[in-house]
Length: 137
Image (tube, rainbow, N blue to C red; front, side, top):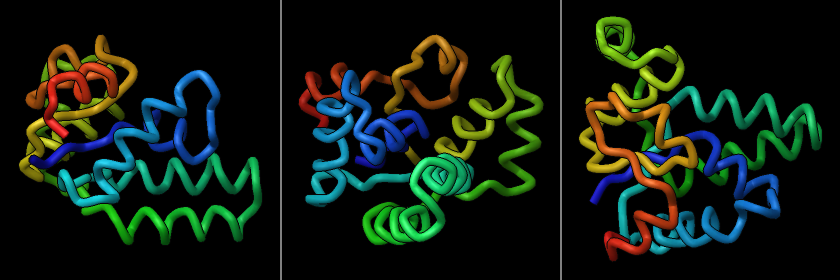
């Protein structure tokens, strides 16, 4: 199974966000063990670099990006992805780009904390807890 993680799940894990860390950790563990193929949208990496750099400095940000690239495949943001995101029915362009990148990369699921943002996504979205409970991992 190919799953794309929304940026919020990655940041929850990397920044050890107390309320969300445990679920993000379980999902990340499935990817790291190779139980599923994990995808990140290319824009997630720029978001992580920005937030981590701002919080912890450039060196930790670069190291986190390197670690993510070791275990995740990348869902590209191409002209086709952007055109489809613009033509779609999602109200938030950033989420539409992520959803369309997931779709074009062959993801079967998007894992996010914000289900309502992906209600019109071409790829079904699940919270980490929902996805783990399905036994998809």
